Amino acid sequence: MTNKFNLILASSSPRRKELLGHLKIPFTILTKHTDEISAETDPGKFAADIASQKGTVVAESTTLERAIIISADTVVAQKGKIYGKPTNIDEARIFLSELADGTHSVFTAVHIIKKDGANFSTHSFVEESLVSFNKISEHLMKLYLATGDSLDKAGAYGIQGPSLTFISKVEGDYANVVGFPLSRFVTEMEAFLGETVWSELF
Image 1 (cartoon, helix red, strand yellow):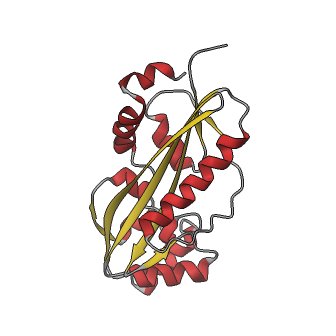
Image 2 (cartoon, rainbow, N blue to C red):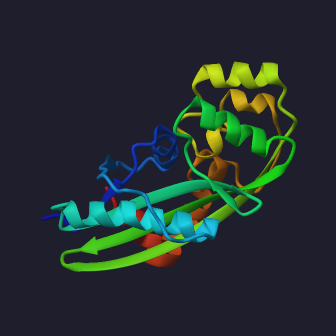
């Protein structure tokens, strides 16, 4: 039996997979269905609750004795309204129209679970970035919606794609807007598990 921990990413997001991959530490992807429903109305707490749900169900299902499970959830919020992933193109258009010509917040919550045999310990954090949109003309709206880029992303846009045609400003961690605040994750992991955590993963 190895003394090292297995790193598990409890997310099927290709963007989170790519960002976590920058650490050059092998990890596996394991996801389990959750309803992603929360009674929280504060966007940061909402994201934290959903991230916790995603990680907990994976931690409870894995047969690995020693594992670090990482889960995350990203939401967009403006004027008290939380924007998750749109259900269709029409809803995506509504989201983008409401976010256009203004500044909104992007919250990504990350939940870390350490499983060591029957013992579990957890740590969570939430990162916030601000994103400003220009006005979105009808022509530009049609072009963007036609790409399909909006349908699997909170707030109906992905910052690393064609939405850059109407994003005017980003304040804070760019990676957070993509969906995983990598630099904050590193410092939080070291604070939670110690700076030797990286040598204990394989």
